Image: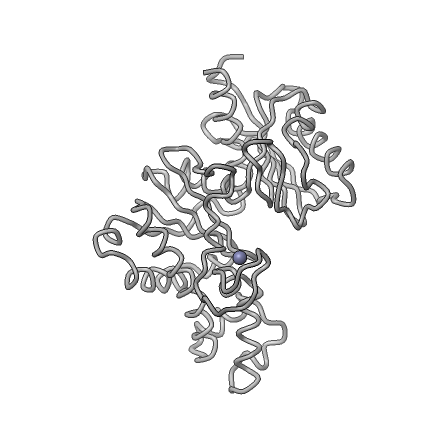
Length: 316
Ligand SMILES: [Zn+2]
């Protein structure tokens, strides 16, 4: 097998599903897998991951396996840290485990970092040298890619924009701090603010049943004043975090992704407006803002890209 034809497996480990794909070096997806995650035990998870690699390979050994995970992969030890939704794998050296079970070199990576790498490679950041991805979902994820490589920092914790403090007197965050971006612009933040607002004010949201960012954005698009305020609160919080990041790093591209970004230009324009007023004018002009382009594929494509870079680096 020559380097030009090498294929890789990317696994995207979520709280609910395991997604996987076999991908060539151009990023073309050759086969896919999508299964409920078996997180009842460490052994069940590892068996599932190894089985997924075998299924995706289809008798053609891949050159490497990348694994995107909802936690931090400690650069020094290779062990998974801070993975509350995947507690069974906390502290595990996943690269060693998967390599041993599959016979393939394995490269675990934080899922937001992997998604950022995918967008920088083939998506909304492909023409930029420095990229920040912000994923707006249950939590707020982030990843930095400089010149085609993830900037993971000393231990792997870099890029955690969701834990920039945007409200010093704000509510307690799961990380131990207060008023993190995630406490306002994560899904729980949207719901908390909506519930508080409609307890004392008239709004279409009172009749909405279950509150979610989708429902709130829908009401905002219909002109509901309370819903518009909640959308704007979230956009302002993201804008504060992005502005701080741009002033620190003078980046070229900001990509907004994750489920909430399906609100499209409606949310993106508000984030850009709040970023503009808080950023050095020249730094703001240097940066361009895009919605993520790879959608649900970002995780598996990014994980495969992690493996491509890992294998190349190992044999360079
Ligand atoms: Zn936090």
